[in-house]
Image (cartoon, rainbow, N blue to C red; front, side, top):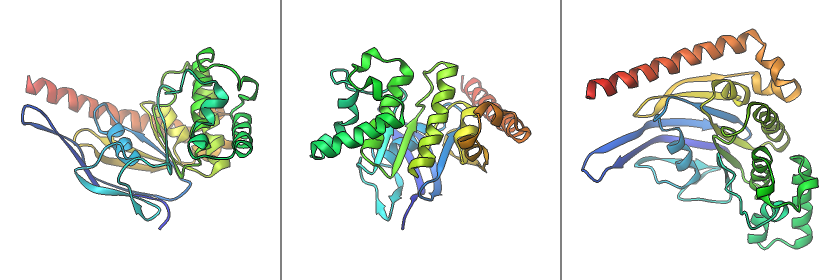
Length: 268
């Protein structure tokens, strides 16, 4: 069975004092191959925990992740991760960073060079391939991270706030690049973000998670990612439906944050 299945996933963290925190509760979701999912929710709703379980970095308390018919039991090359900070190897140049995965697989040099050159063209860094990563801006480093992830040819790309540290203009350019890569590669992408606008722009599907225990509160199927492939993102934002949905989700998350604050005050 192709695609990604999240099946009745729950995650409990047991604390040293004997108490526990229920981070996720009965989360289920089916993603077809090639879908682009954005995940929103208030702080502490388990977004990153969910992503780390899909990546295989955490084992769930209950439930399972199934990718293309195989149960996920740990990290694997079929799932690539792009973090908020590039997590690049500073002692390597751009070309070496992008080619790291193929090198670890023992790929022939000529084949690896062809893949690296193609991906650097795709992300607009061909002229910077011999540069050290510390010489690059934050946006350029994230382009290297995307290219390095794609060099491993994963089935699923997992993004944890990948654009959160960028300035507004660079972030908008990178949002366009993410849509371009999604459409051209056909990869399944799961994107965690705190930005409602970004989630709307980049989410073909969008889920809003409720506060602890984290669970899916609302799901949307949206046209804006497809629109953004061929239009300026600023024009997409002018669509009346975009503004209407943004306000609806902002109000939803604001109400959740208020609920969380109320719980905290009651506990004190």
